[in-house]
Amino acid sequence: MKLRQKSYLWTVLLVAAVLFVSMLCLVIPNIRMTIGSVESRALGEEKALALSVDGLFEKIPDEARKKYARGYAVYDSGGATFALGKGRETWVATEPVPPETEVGKVRWITRDGRTVLTITDTLSDGVWLRYGLDTTEVVQRLTWQAIGSTLLCTLLTCGVAAALYVMQERINRPVERLAHELRTPLTVIRGYGELLERAKLTPEQQHTAASYIVSESERLGEISQKLLTLADARKNVFRPERVDLAALAAHLRQTYPTLETDVQWNELTADRALMLSLLGNLIGNAVKASAPGSPVLLNASPGVIEIVDRGSGMTPEQLRYVNDPTHARNPSVRSGLGVPLCHEIAALHGATLRYTSEPGKGTTATVKFADAAQ
Amino acid sequence: MARILVLEDEKAINDLVALNLGMVGHTAVQAFTGKEALSIAATTPVDLLILDVMLPDTDGFSVYEKLKGTPAIFLTALGETADKVKGFERGADDYIVKPFEMTELLLRVEAVLRRTHKSESRYHVDDIEIDFEAKTVTKGGVPVELTMQEYALLEVLVKNRNIALSRQRLMREAWDVSFLGESRTIDVHIQRLRKKLGMDDRIKTIYRLGYRFEETP
Image 1: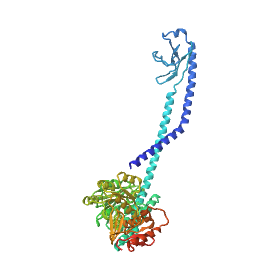
Image 2 (image 1 turned 180 degrees about the vertical axis):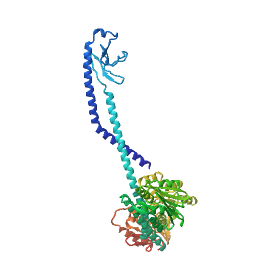
Image 3 (image 1 turned 90 degrees about the horizontal axis):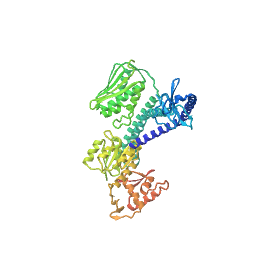
Image 4 (image 1 turned 90 degrees about the vertical axis):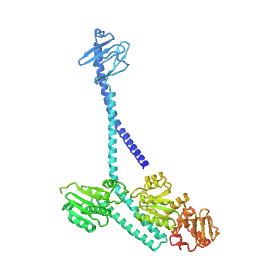
């Protein structure tokens, strides 16, 4: 079990990784185009800025340049304040750059998260300037956005796949149960058949073998009946009609002699055959749990049908299983397909099935219809 | 003659397994719940457990754990790899998947018993005695000369006594030959066995099936 879960996890992770990488491959050309356009725009702005600063620099009077001892000049150019230095360092910024800031050959400066530009190199006496907007931040942001959205898409796809898987599991589980259910009668029929064929049996043993073969064949018949009901429910062969509940109860009383009914709900909209199958299954299970001859009650009030028995009851563990409409193989309740089928039929009618029980005191199965007004 | 505990909650299958074990001379003790099995095993030791995996009160694995040391064969209706792995991780000796063939189960029982030295060591019927350990046969105290092939055939027939075995099965189990074809070779060896041991009425030909060694002719 552990082994299976582990390999399962790896498969899921691998599929998610492949999805992620392939989606990223699809997104990359797009992102590169966007980055390209951002960079060319930045280049254009850089050129324009360079031109205007160059023009400014031309006009700097000598006196102004001498204003600062360390060779910095400050200019006001209609909104932006430039600090220009001559020599090895030249700064252009919205505000004077502290001279003690370390200056490399090329530097990016950001002030108030706004202006960003590049700087400096020197010619012998003149100044060689480069200005521009810093695109690294934009490129970084775009890259992370791309990765983030790809990741989101991958997660969404995985989510949808998981949902589909769960749905399919739900659909297959009753069928799987039936396949398991088939094995006991098959083992018995085959085994006793082999015995009859191959072993030298006493007449009593022969009789036992034959009667087991007959009773297990009957069980196969029951399973096939359940399978057909399930197939009908699956195909949504759901023909709702007005069903007279009192008549239905009377019909059930004929099949189950220990059934006592109290019907306060005259008509409900339901598929008659499916409803009969649902109630029949619930009553059948209740009768099985009860002592022979002990009564089973069917109470119906508008919107609610209850099947009550005073039988052996269920442990909390068993109760948890039967109340779970998707319950997996369940060793403690060998009701065959019965309970999951009941949940399925209830769901088709927009109703819910819930068991309450106490060991030794009995069990109540409640079918609650969502549309109680009918 | 091993004492074998059969734990299976389906009465039909439990009876079936017990009947088959009884056929070939084992003593089958039947239990239908894990609790019952544990209390039986606590009072009298058993040589082998045949355990159903899914039980109403517990599962076969935990019964096996509690009776640690007793070899076990698991019956599983699941046929799922994960459950097989689980069984073997905990050291099960064998498992068999439902629906299974009874002769297959008996063969596996025999294999496990042989491995754990709980297999019957000698068998006698009429004036014939077979010593399975020394692989010798005596008739009226006088050793009977049997070829290897004849002896192997006799052993498989006796270990699966009262149950008919097909010629194919006999070839496979006795001689480890699994090709389809000249299974009539079996007939020749059976004739010799019958002659050498005077077993005309014990080794019966079963029409269309094969041969059966009958304890009570």
